[in-house]
Image (cartoon, rainbow, N blue to C red; front, side):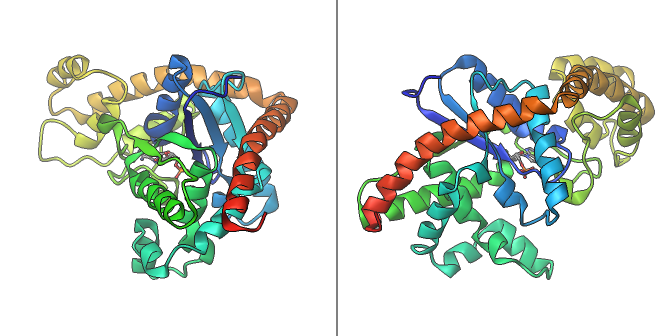
Amino acid sequence: METDKPILLSGIKPTGAAHIGNYFGAIKQWKEFQTIGSHQCYFMIADYHALNFVQSAGDMRDLTHDLVLTYLAAGINPEKVVLFKQSDVPAHTELAWIFDTITTMPYLERAHAYKDAEAKGKEVSVGTFNYPMLMAADILLYNTAKVPVGHDQKQHIEYARDTAEKFNRIYGDTFTLPEEFIVPDVATVPGVDGRKMSKSYNNTIPLFSTRHEIEELVMSIVTDSSGDRPENVYAIHRLLKTERELDAVYDEHQGRYKALKEALVEDLDAFIKPMREKYHELASDPRTVADILEKGGQLARERANAKIEEVRRAVGVS
Ligand code: AMP
């Protein structure tokens, strides 16, 4: 595996079944980078981030296993990229702690995720509050140049960049400043209720849904009756087909929402079916997942350990 290319890193939390928002907002771009070969890609299972949501050992193990299968079924190739689990690389939490010591509370209080939780009157864990520092560590530990993410993560990349700059100012030039990579067209995939598709809103179309599940979910998409085009149906359809292709369908069935939803079911099922089949095929071989994580963890640790040594020397705890 090549190591002199610029680094690209991204990840998903194992908090529930991955959905088409994760695919179009993240994994699709990952695959494109994997194919182009311009970067050495690191794709992470963000299990320490998930601990803020999943607090059962059995669930965590199952969800982690499931997310590896998801990456593989969606086309991530562990021969070409480093596919690893965050908790297999202890340097992530070590670096997050070091970042905590140079970060102020008011700065973290400005994070959208924290402000949203506060506004909803939720009791926010210290882990949730510190989330941006663990994510900064994830990124900076690998000298990452590019981070492909959905629009929701833009602020977190800015936090990583600010933190790198602050560390470099205090301790000398240590970290590369990362850049986010967001595809504008699919920056936010809407869920069946029209809000952002999210596991926490319970409005997702899971990536390996059966045909029957797709039918039920698509028929439940909330449509506003003011125009000829049901916007939420169109927004999801647009991920699968070009504007020109859709013009023909939406003109033919103008104002007939049921027919348009049926057309979306067809296209979604055609898109999901090969991945669904691959997912079930892989699920019957548990060894594959363990082997992939072992190899990926080793490669990630090699790079991360070299960086954390440099950081330790820079701060004087080496
Ligand atoms: P998460 O499920 O929060 O761990 O998110 C994993 C990745 O999927 C991140 O890069 C997110 O930006 C992306 N993502 C999640 N939900 C959506 C969505 N509704 N639209 C676009 N991208 C998304």
